[in-house]
Length: 399
Picture 1 (cartoon, helix red, strand yellow):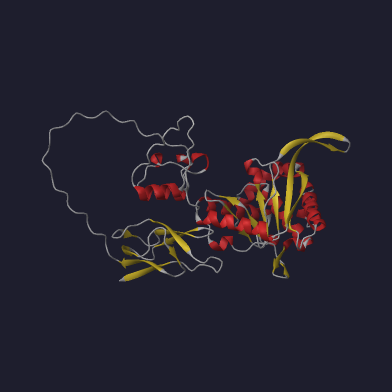
Picture 2 (cartoon, one colour):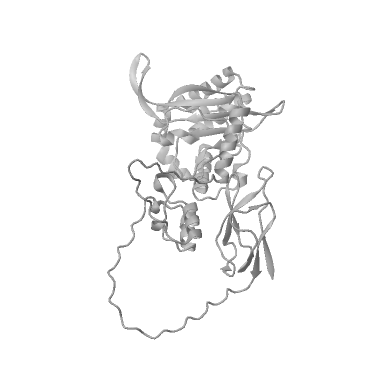
C-alpha cells in the first residue's frame, strides 16, 4: 500500500519551507518514526518522520526545493522490504601482496568530540567519519549541516591551500533561511521601531549569597541547579505586572496590553539566535523557570525546537554575559516593545554605607519602543528589576 509523505502543517507565520536534506534514498528500507527528511523554515529545522515501516518508493522534491504546507514530497510502500543486494562474483584467490604500511589513524578535527546528538545521528546514519569533515561552527566545531553537506558530496574535502604571502582569499556562501530571516527581522526592528536604550547596574551580592546558601538544597529538591536566569526572569515578570506598558505591543494605531507574561529567552545555536517562549511566567516558580530554560537549551542544541516553542512572547530576556559582553544595546524583537539585556558579572569597587567594598556587579540594559514607552516608564521598570535583584526576598514575597 502506497503512503504519501507530506509537509507538516505550517503556522500562518511560516509561508513555506526548504528541503534541507534527505536521510534516505529511493529503494531504502525505513522504519516507523525514523527521520526521512529535514525541512528548513525561517525559524527552525523540522524533521519529518516516516509514518510506517516500509520502503522509500519515490522522492518528489529534492534538496533545495521550496515546498508548502501539506504538499506531498515522497511516497512510501508500506510493509515492503528493501531489495536484496546483487550477488558479487567470486574471484580466484591471488597471491598475497605485501601488507602496506599501516596508515596513521586520522586525527579528530577541532570540535569533533563536541558533536550535537543530531550531528552524531547524521554521522551514524550516513557512516561519515567526522574527523574528515571541515567544521564551520564556532571554534571549528563540526555541525550537523557540515555532515549533511559532506554526505552529499561523498568525497573528503580537499585540504585548504596555504595562503601565499600577499594573497587575499575569500569564500562566498548563501545565507541559510534562518539567518536570512534574522537579518530581515533586525532590519524590520531598526526601520519600524523608534528604539532607545537605557542602562543601570545591579549589585548581585544577595543573589550570589542566596545561590550559595540554598543552591545545594534547591538542586536536591527540584533536580536542577539554581542559576542566575531564574532570578532575572522572575524579576522581569514581577516588574511587568507593575509596568504593563512595557508588556504591551503596537498593532497599527492600537496598543495591545497583554494580561500575562510570556517571556522569550534568547538562546544561541549554530544556526543563529532563537527565542523560545516561557509561557505564563507570572504563575511559574523558580524551579519551573530553571527547568523550562534547561529544556529549551537542550532542544536548541539538539535541533528539536518546534515552531510552537518560538511563537508569541510579550517580552525578551537576552544574556550576552555568557559570552563575556560587558555592555550592549539589545535589539527589540518585534512585535514586542522591549527587551532586557544581561551582561557579564564583574567584581568591582563600589561605595556602600561610606565604605569602599568589592561587589559582583552587572550592567543591565533595556531597549524599548519609544512610540509607546516613555523614558520614565523604561527607567522605572529597570530600577524595579534592580531593586528586586538587590533584595531578592522582595520577589519571593511578591513585593
